[in-house]
Amino acid sequence: RQAAFRADVSALLEQVGTGKESLSFMKRRIRRLAAQWGMAAQQLDAKLHGRWRDEKKILVHVGFLTEESGDVFSPKVLKGGPLGEMVQWADILTALYVLGHNLKISISVKELQGFLGVPPGRGSCPLTGPLPFDLIYTDYHGLQQMKQHMGLSLKKYKCHIRVIDTFGTEPAYNHEEYATMHGYRTNWGYWNLNCRQYMTMFPHTPDNSFMGFVSEELNNTEKHRIQMNKVRNMAVVYGKEASMWKGKEKFLQILHRYMEIHGTVYYETQRPPEVPAFVKNHGLLPQQELQQLLRKAKLFIGIGFPYEGPAPLEAIANGCVFLQPKFQPAHSSLNHEFFRGKPTSREVSSQHPYAEQYIGRPHVMTVDFNNSEEFEAAVREIMRTEVEPHLPYEYTCEGMLERVHAYVQHQDFCSPEAPLPSVNSSRTLQGSPIVLLPNSTLLGWASNATAPPCWPPLSALRLLLSTDGQSCVEACRGADLVCEPTFFRFVNNKDALSRLEVQCEAVEVETNHIFPAFSVLRRECGLQKDPLLFSCAGHRPKYRRMCPCRDVRPGQVALCRDCL
Ligand code: UDP
Image (cartoon, rainbow, N blue to C red; front, side, top):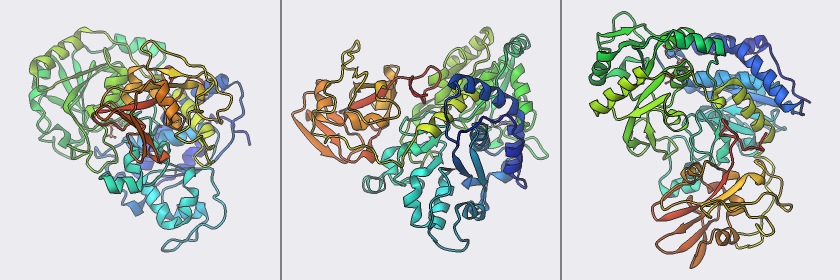
């Protein structure tokens, strides 16, 4: 069946259910953004010129909200607990619904079993018939629940699953045997999925799929009005829980010399002692009221935690400058409690690396908060500069619809991939026109008649050799491209090595997450033996990676130019 865009979200609101504060929060959000989603649907519809879109049967099982997983989030919704996940799930539900898919929602193991047709009861009782869904969106909790209740059949059906995974899962952690043998085992990883089945909150590593969420959009009149009404010396602090404020008084005091400081810190009866007396605390605000506060404020200031949440994008969209601390050294699962046990080695260079790297000045300033002079100079600069409200396209409703549409229609982890010539072959790239880019380490080919069908289309491929110790995430980004894990299998061969003019004295084929790569010391090349370990994120000193990059649609890093 052809999917038809939907404009009215009332049926979705009914499906979301009641009885938990988290569900009420999500429903308020869906209702508040409904008109914006409706407009975005019209825009995408026009852009796709009525192209055929399959209507998919989709199950959304929100594992972290189930009682069986302990549901620690719902009771904290009104008490300053994390809301980012709920923001994202609300937006995923709305996007799938607005795109016109046939949606079922479950927030308990019982509902999950009912939808899957698994007889209720204890233990693992494998599903016998065909899976009644094309796609299942869940999270790590949900995955564990499916393993327990679908038993052996999970393996058979797992290509249909998508895992919403805020911070991301890198290939070395996802590969069970490799993770176990090489110390990448964590509390979450090793499900042997295709890593693009993990969908993240921000575009961390292209090994995963970037799902994202949306922020409120403004029309030109609203933008203009907001700019007129900005209060030059008003700052709002990012941090709704009192514990986040511990030990932050020093730089808040400096800020207070210049600006009036507002907070939205949850409290029960008394003012939390962590919040300095000079801060005007509004208590935790409903999302809509927070937006109003951000519209007046000139500055939104991060104090180190939470990492990578939605609020800074909302602040920037409402015309604030986001001032945040640079982390030196970067925080990661190796050196920071919060990230410990998370299935990624990603280095977090500031409180919000997306804001730092993808948005930057004048909307975002990332400085060393321990350096009072640098901090003070930044505050003075912010008070002087006029900035316009800004929202990256990929965080608008249309941007999210476009991306989710492309994933739903094109990502396929179930069909077997067409066999490629062996890694020793020198035939794969033959006959394809080479595009040499200025530094001559980049090449690509525009068309390849013998290539199997592939999404993203192979025409987007640009091959590149990283510098010593650099990952493909960084190498491709340095060339204004994006690492594309789908393409690794086309460049994991001797021919690609020779096209890159890598002088290898020997070529080995090994199970190693940094391969394909070139060892600078031994002058040897390594090709990848296990496709599950192809990794954009992998890097090691004294190794240069062979990186399959692709082009990018402006404002939509998840998609290549011809990906729609
Ligand atoms: N938020 C809110 N009221 C407040 C402060 C924040 O509703 O007083 C919302 C905010 O609009 C954002 C969400 O909380 O969409 C998540 O915010 P944050 O960036 O703090 O991420 P978290 O750590 O909660 O995931």
